[in-house]
Length: 477
Ligand SMILES: Nc1ncnc2c1ncn2[C@@H]1O[C@H](COP(=O)(O)OP(=O)(O)OP(=O)(O)O)[C@@H](O)[C@H]1O
Ligand SMILES: Nc1ncnc2c1ncn2[C@@H]1O[C@H](COP(=O)(O)OP(=O)(O)OP(=O)(O)O)[C@@H](O)[C@H]1O
Image 1 (cartoon, rainbow, N blue to C red):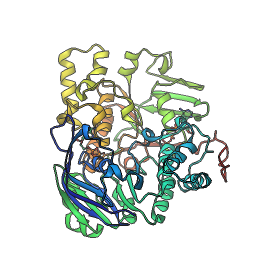
Image 2: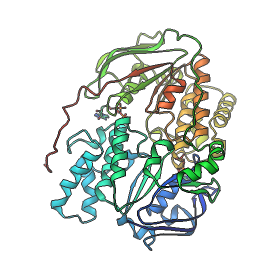
Image 3: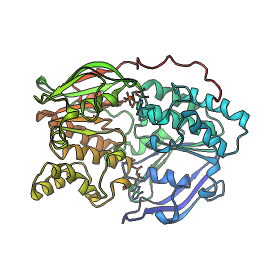
C-alpha cells in the first residue's frame, strides 16, 4: 500500500499554453480507492502519468510537489503499476507471457515465483491464449487484458488505471472488476468515464476542475448528491443519466457495401453483412470475435481470404480501389486513433483527405474550420495530434474520416474515451449524418451507443477459429 500526497501540483506540457492540471492538493491514504473524474482534456491521464513518474523534466513545466510514500514519483516507480488508456502501446515483449514476466523480472522477483504469478494474473483477466501468443496479434480487448495482467502480477502498492475496461466485453469487464475488488494492500486511482460500473470499486470520488483545482472530493454519494447536476452539465458522466434515442425515421436503402461470406484466416470466420445508406449498424460481440477485422475488410483496408466484398456499383472490391476513390467513398476510424495520424498539426490532419481528392484551398479551409468546430477541436487546431488526450484524439480521427464527406463511415469504437458532453455531440452528429443519407458501421462495446443510435445490430459470435481455451497454462516453455 502506498500513500500519495500532492501539494499545489501542476503540469504544463511543453508546447502548450494552458496547464493540463494545476493547483491540485490531494492526500490519498494507504489502501484508498479513488475514482478520478473530469471532462475530456481535464488532465486525468496527465495526473496518472505524473504519479507514475513518467513526466520527464524536459517534457513540460511542473509546479508544486508529488510524493509517493515520501518519495519523488521517479524514485518510487517500484511501488507503482500503471495501465495506459491505449494498452497496445505498453506491450513491449513479443510473446504475451514474457510481457507479464518482464515487469516481475525487472523488480527482481525470484525466478521460481515468476511463472506461477504470470499464470495467475492471466487467469484473473481471462486472457484466452497460451503464454506464447504473439503480442502483435491481439485484439484491442485482448491487449487490454494482457496489460492489466502485467500490473496485477506486480502487486503494486499504488495501482493507476486509465479506463481499464473500455475495450473489454461485458464478461471481461466484470471479471476484471472482480479481480480489482479482490486486491488487498493496494492503493488505487482509477480513471473511468462511465461512472456507474466503477462506483462499486471505489470509496472516494475526486473530480478535476478543468483549468485548475479540484471541483469535488468525497464519498461517491456525497459528491453526486451535492454536485451531480453541475457535473453533468460540464460533461461528467453521472450515475442514473439516460439519453433519449436518436433512431432513424426511415428504412435503410440498399447496401452501400456488402460482404458475402467474407472472412480472414485466423481472424474472422466468414460472415455475410451489408451496410445501407441512412442507417447506423452496430457491430458487437466478445473480445477477439473479429469486429475490428470486419471493419478493416469492409472499409477496404485489408483483403479478405474468403468471400467477396462489393460496393458503390464498382466491379472491383474496395481494397483494390485507388486511394483517392476509397477516401471519397469510405471514411474509416481505427481502434487506436494514434496509429492513424500522418501530420504534426490537428488542422493539417483534417486537410489531408480533401487535398488528396483535389479540392480547392478555399473549400479545404472551410471544411477544416467546420469540423474543428463541430468536434470541439478549434482550440487545438495547432496542436500535434500525438499530444492529444484520449478523448480529443478520438474526436480528431472521427473528424478526419468526415473530411472527405464519404457516403459510408466505418468507425471502430467511435465513442471511446468521451465525456458525457462530447459523447452526446458525437452521437448527435452521427445521427444527423445518417439522416442525411450516410451509412455508418460502428464497432462498439458501448451499450448506450447501441441503445441510443443504432438502427440495427450485428452480433458477431465467439471466435470460432481459435483453439479451445487452455484450462491450465504450461509453465515457461
Ligand atoms: N504530451 C502532451 N503534450 C502536449 N499536450 C498534452 C500532452 N498530453 C496531453 N496534453 C494536453 O493536456 C490536456 C490534458 O490531457 P489529458 O490526457 O491529461 O486529459 P484527460 O482528462 O485524460 O482527457 P481524456 O478524458 O480525453 O482522456 C489536454 O488538453 C491535452 O491535449
Ligand atoms: N495482426 C494480427 N495477426 C494475427 N491475428 C490477429 C491480429 N490482430 C488480431 N488478431 C486476432 O484476430 C481475432 C480477431 O481480432 P479483432 O481485433 O478483429 O477482434 P475484435 O472483435 O475487434 O476484438 P476486441 O473487442 O477485443 O477489440 C482475435 O482472435 C485476435 O487475436
